[in-house]
Length: 459
Ligand SMILES: [Zn+2]
Ligand SMILES: [Zn+2]
Image 1 (cartoon, protein in one colour):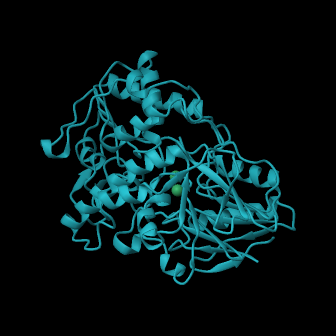
Image 2 (cartoon, rainbow, N blue to C red; image 1 turned 90 degrees about the horizontal axis):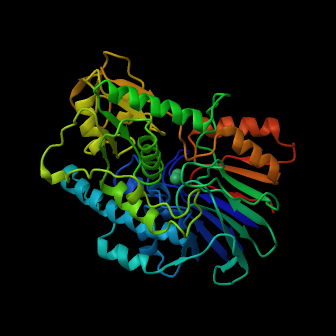
Image 3 (cartoon, rainbow, N blue to C red; image 1 turned 135 degrees about the vertical axis):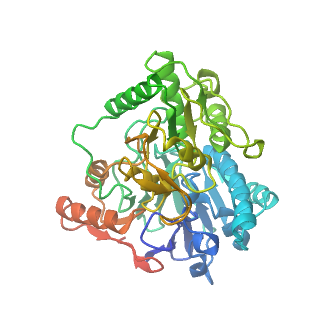
């Protein structure tokens, strides 16, 4: 019998972690930390592995909700083999070293005593045991050697993969990880198997979102360029809060193209910190990973102005500049949060949102505010100083996740015996289940896995 156990803390986009057991074989897929929770609550339910013997762990990509607790897992299960793509290993080191710094600051300023979960030295030690694998080459996993795994390009960020597992009975289980089927600006769309899957474990981030019928990425990009041009020509500054890994690199490339093509004025683009470190990895692997424009070096083709380091005093927003800064959620203590405090009251300025924001984040508070409203930028709606909303606020869809129709098409194409829905909030999972029930043949079993519980996979 093959079983699936959901080790995430809840039905949400949290600390992703799943266990697949097949006889004596056991494989863990991803071991992330929750982006919003703090301390031990941010970890996945590793306690449920107590008494078990996870033999292999495969990491789909280097976003922290998939890799953030890997050194913690490795410390508990040093014998488990750790597998990922080379690009995920390189970006993962950068992300996790930054995470040590963030956790250390949270211990100091917020008194989170269990932080940091690991030190820089412990991370380096753990990372020395990571084994990298190329896409589309099957390899043996688990000590028995009778389970096979193959990684497929997931088109989400540099190095991202979906994972095919083949049990000794020949059951094919495919976990999408985070997936984007469409081309982005740098990263081509996913290259996933089109048949031969018995069980599909599928992300459904956008399961509840209906995308406008006339949406195209190109049209959205034009609107983005136009908004930036109008703001700069009006003497304003443009603040774009972004995730350091993925969106920063995709949009940096587009901003460079806009500037070279005369679609926006030639103004300074400020970018730095973690985003810049990740950009170096994108550049280093420009010939070694799937690209829409192989050989393109972001650091050479898009000139940016580095942001001053945190310690070098306060940062002032200058008119006629673009700020591409993390965090995408505008979490307190981040640069995008600090800059938002200066930009919000200025009519000439603009804040452009380019991705998902958690409903409780400062970014979501600003997104949903009306002109003249007062918003707070603290950790919740009652925390921190208030700022009047007078700047222009626009939202764009450049998601690194597949939209609902693309997920449905993929599921229909595969026609597996079972679909397990993960990586979505309750609303997204339910909406996706309802759509699948409507569009899939009746013999397909659709499962929303209960956190902390095991379920049987249809072999
Ligand atoms: Zn991701
Ligand atoms: Zn994710």
